[in-house]
Length: 121
Image (cartoon, rainbow, N blue to C red; front, top):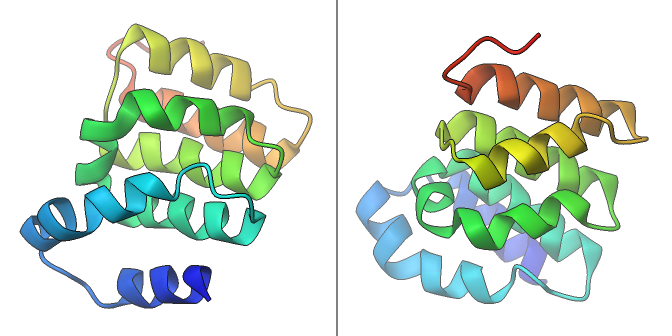
């Protein structure tokens, strides 16, 4: 049910102010939800709402180690979309670019290319 609600909100094309002011506090509480499909929906939300990635990046980094590959993939994509870059994100994405899941590894490598101030070799 929660995942369906989050998915519906993503499709609603809400203005950034509503996303940050109204949804961010609620979404933030779901980052560690026990159900994988909720974490996946939340990860997808961050990919659609990059403004939240900027303010919650420290809380999103652990999701690059989530037990579900789709969550790791979506969070890597969200970092790439948001363009947020700092040392902790770089290290986490470098690690994720070596993920055993090829889609996670690809998305993390793409995110590094998108956000790195220097070319990644």
